[in-house]
Image 1 (cartoon, rainbow over the protein chains, first blue to last red):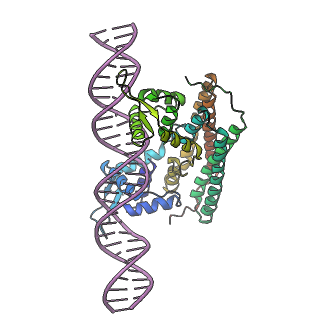
Image 2 (tube, each protein chain N blue to C red):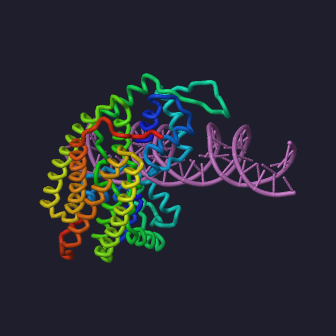
Length: 177
Length: 177
DNA sequence: TCAGTATGTATGCCGAGTATGCATCGCCTT
DNA sequence: AAGGCGATGCATACTCGGCATACATACTGA
């Protein structure tokens, strides 16, 4: 989803061709999201098919094909921006399933899992802090705000791990049916 | 990913056929994850292709085909459980792109977006609290732990929204290139 | 008999990755 | 200065996994 609307958002303002879209998109995300080039083009084709963008022919320089936002695309973009992000249905992430399985599989070494997970989150905290610093140095206030969100998330994860590891496990009732 | 390993995890212990897998999986997640039945079968087929499960023929009752975990599947499962969850590469979620676009598109009514988002998170908090209560009532301690994680996440999101809305926006430097 | 449930297959879209093709530009070397 | 060559710009095609819909069929119980 976000790629689709990201493309629309970038096309608002000026027409771009695929390769440019990729670059702008990655720049917007401060290099934290390396987009697959193939996907850009399929996304653009689908957007064209749905009438959200249209090619601004004819092809130029070296086969470059620019796209511009259509009124329908404009509308779709505005609408997407206006609706709140419901996020994934929650509990669909790997970590949840992993935790459940580790709990119910006898030898599932829960404490080890928590410890490893904690280390991974700490590492992520460090990475994010570096990223935030860089974003500020580059004057990318908007990016820094995102990183702040990711930091809060990771802190929440850490807190969660701490809560879990301070539980005493063993004889709790994880009913199967 | 999580579905694949979820299936493996369920098959550890007893052979199951597709429909049963679906039911067990959804029960394990406490009904928070409605799995598509078609996907169960394709997942099972791919797992068979990769040698992680094998059919325990012949077909029974009404075409039922049971699968059992293979030694390789066992190994793959253990390995997955042992490695920490790196999570999505961070910043790949819709909300981040939405925020960026709203920031850089002039009319992007950032405050409205934040307000709507906050409402959505509050709603989620309520839902999760109900869910946690139900999990505890049902003796599903394992599930309650998951919900606790989701709660912490949502609280982090709320805190983030609060931080953002108390910033004074306007003349900040969101460099484009 | 009819509704519903159990069980499975077929098909198609979308996300995402890999591989390939070709033009151009700049640099290095002789 | 010419020729070669690697990097970059730009695009397409192919493949695979996730996920949803739709369909088919058997059984079960009111």
